[in-house]
Length: 326
Ligand code: GLV
Image (cartoon, rainbow, N blue to C red; front, side):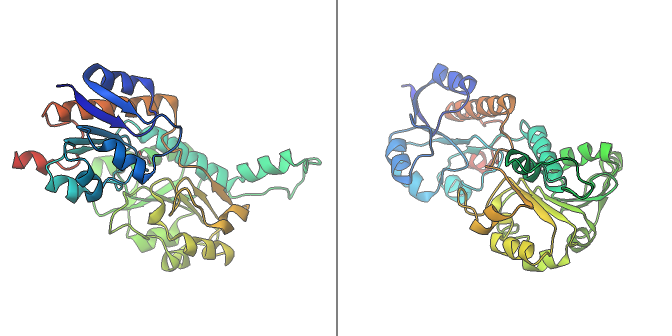
């Protein structure tokens, strides 16, 4: 019997080709996220699911899909999956680590530069016909070179962001529960400091932590109060890591200078005040959105799903305990 899989939204063709070679594929035909009802109905008879970070994969979904044997998330983050529920049912879940590291680090730098040098705002200004000639006080922003970069979460993406800072001659601080090995720390070079020190001393605070119980609202009122009034907050991780209402307040009270955000607490909703602020750069969650990287993510997710359906341990399993039980 050929396995039936559901792909919840169109992904790059190379991923679909792998799936079609091994499975019977149902692809959600619309260019939008599936509603909960659509997802539960479509997954009902499926053996495998290729999901996106926008799909909630929880006990209710597993109950609606009694034949489901594997979930492959086409994302590095997997906070949309209730891992305990998957593990309890012996269902392996997978993610797509590594392949999007550099692309996400590139976008983090695009946000650092856009926020500090007012790129999006200056573009809007120019398009609005407001550019009436060079001005000595026009569109002044903050320098990036020579400043202090604070990286919260020094995993793969945090390290790739640090590497890119080399050309800007920055002092780089990081905070993490795990310390880098001394050789890596020296080669980047980065210094481990406690979270409060990082907030107090950094000109750019950039977030690269997964979303979990420990990191939910990691940055809130207390943290903004510690930051420099000239500092920028950059978030390409997950929206709920930042208390978005507290961010609005911090910006209104000039506790920080600006922000560059690729993710939001209640995507796709955004705190309406942010939309009005010129010193905030807003992107629609495109950290990994390059042609090359999205193709690699699709291939990786498809290979994970095919391996799991064959009963093998998929290369990027995030709940390997399921294989201990078997
Ligand atoms: C994107 O946000 C991802 O987790 O891959």
